[in-house]
Image 1 (cartoon, rainbow, N blue to C red):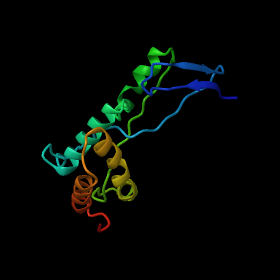
Image 2: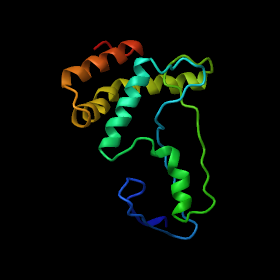
Image 3: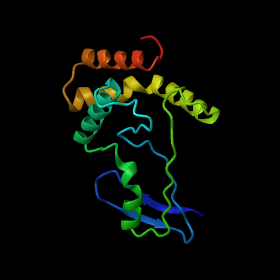
Image 4: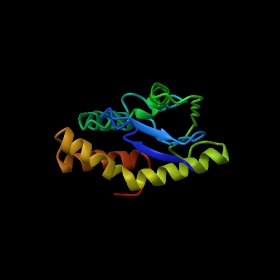
Length: 152
């Protein structure tokens, strides 16, 4: 019938109470930060890389690290799960790929970024890192311009 009880799966409080029916399974999808790049175009001096590091730092200060995806397999095994399978997919964040499938994924990733960039940036940078709203908007607009997103 599925999971009967799941509390606090990897949120950082250390309370792991998981009880699954025999044969049950857990499936999750998550974005891994920091972002990766297989062609060398995401450099450490780019605005996007700087943004990633700032958001990661802010979320870490909140006690909500955004790099948990890289640890899920180990956490699941440490909690007693067996036959844990981790599948990592390439997920383009722009329209550049030549392959039609990846180009479409990249198009949807850009749409997500267009909608989420400002809200995902505001709390970590203003509340955790002390940035002003205006400073965040300048950074976000720089990223919108660099990614050829909607004019802001």
